[in-house]
Image (cartoon, rainbow, N blue to C red; front, top):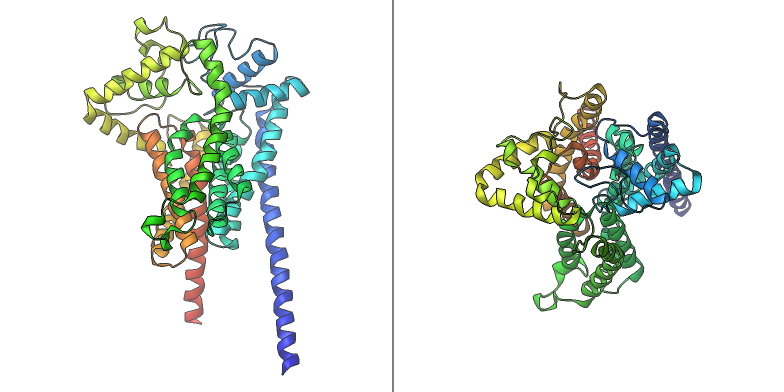
Length: 459
């Protein structure tokens, strides 16, 4: 009898080991597919930098990087979007991504294709791994594999992976932050500070903010979530809520972020003669996004080469880029104060563009295929998975899953809200897509479990 039990245990361990190898092999295959599709995108976009659908900004980043390696600093040779005069300093674009391109151009020569390929490799590996890791942590390894596979073939992700813009690195950074925050909360449940993980969280936040300063708006929500969950607040008396583990960790994270932003704040102060924390784009975006020209119906892209420039009041044009950004932000906020009802209705109208999943006659073939075959197909599964995850988590005693899903939901709501209140383009939604893919993976898993249960009952 004992021998039989021993043999059964051995068989079970062997089966488990075989399953794990199979699971890891499948993950490697998914990563391979992700890399292949992103490399294809990079190769198709090639060694020239042109105005392809949704990625016009790559012309600006390419031009800036060339100026940097030529010794002209962050400036353009000719007048450039949004209202930057020739030869004058700009802070409108991500310093970090510009330096990435400049470094590639300096080392290998001005070959945009090399920058695309490196970016595609990084995205194929790390985006896929991070989505797998977050999904596996919150649900299980099978959900992780499905979510990773969906992200690997998601057209928007591999299309933008070949574009010379911030989206790919920015999405990877956000996923890194979420994964790091989940691990920080797990490791500090016993109130012992794991400084290495806090340091990693700080670096992830710093790099992500340097790619897109808009992430700063989400930081208070992230910090509050981390503070509340570190140390297991659900079992702590109210008098112990202000525990030092979270406060010291968040202080380290904030210090790292400040140190990473500070050099650019100092640079901005010197070249513009005024305080600019990081980039000069919030004012422009809010002003243009809420201009009365729209009425209550948002238009994602105004027609005409000078359409946006012509909306700027002429008396503000002599200002430098930083001063103009501040002045436009004030004007934009005044639009809201003057007519809050219009602002509300305009924000609602932006949802139609932000969540667009259907083909449009205004879009080209590539855009329509990308939209329908990625977000259009995935959206029902994203919503189903989100609903089921929330419903099952509310009834579950799994604290870790509840905390993690709550973080993902907060991000989706806050990040979407920021763009619905300012400027809503499809590519600005992609970080939300990356998080919602996790719920889509859970949807496929849940549906398969339900179908399997029905089949077994009938059998």
